Image (cartoon, rainbow, N blue to C red; front, side):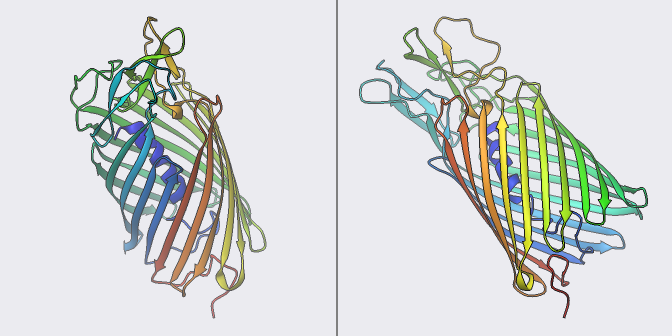
Length: 422
């Protein structure tokens, strides 16, 4: 399926899995273990929309003095319905239209009479991905990593690689970090990419779409006190190539508001995304609190603010409970349009994808950690997200996420709880 829909799902999965490889609080991680593995199962479900089931396994091992190797493999099964951009409940027109789904299947519907345009397109997809990281301590205060990754799905392939570093300075009271990666992606719908701004009745199909993504990051973290650590990161992502979603359409309406045609959308061929992320972790007597804020902007006109608060409470015998709340707001892209007027000149770009519109997302969640024995910890995480369109043009969306993780290592790690070794 096309990148923008994929990125939307991947962004949700990133939120869900960001803690898998670093379960310890930011400033309180134990010494590196000889090896460690995480086995994760995740279920992401939008009410009446997309459902994602994911299985992931990661493995990290020290392969020599000051050198380590890690691998991560994941499998995603995605099914359900994605909003295609059509307007709800159009008046009568009697036209028959055919829409192609991200799975390559077609769906025909009639406008008018007792029929209405269903603004959801059914699809199913699977994705396989792998990542390999090799890292080494170049000096006692400087570490570097090289990364390679690839992923495959029914209509989308991605290959990439990159590197990162971390440099401890000021008597190791601060750390400078950075990295860069490049991905080469291919968008290849089963029936080919449609011409941009062509009517969906047009059966013409083009070849596959190519695009390149370059991501870079520069960060700084500082120990404020024995119990407080803060960090500030700036990241930039540059996309070039085919960025249009081949499955999204935009409605053409007449003066009375009745749909008269449906056109495939058109987006710019480049996008520069920027974000600033700030996080502070404070360790109380036993508990740990994380407070973070992220500001995002791009040259499509999208702006967003994300505030996140997490509090981890240490309980009895190594058990721990973490509560989290998150609030997200987004401004719409410059070319986001709910519909186009009949007979009006076509704009340079236009998309009715609600994910480019004004959004508000509120999230609440908990994670419970249970030590099975000295080497195995089980984590169960659940979140409920409510996403709404600030312009009230699309219905609100409820999202449920459940994640279960087994963290296994060859050494006992007592830093995650208040209990001491026997």
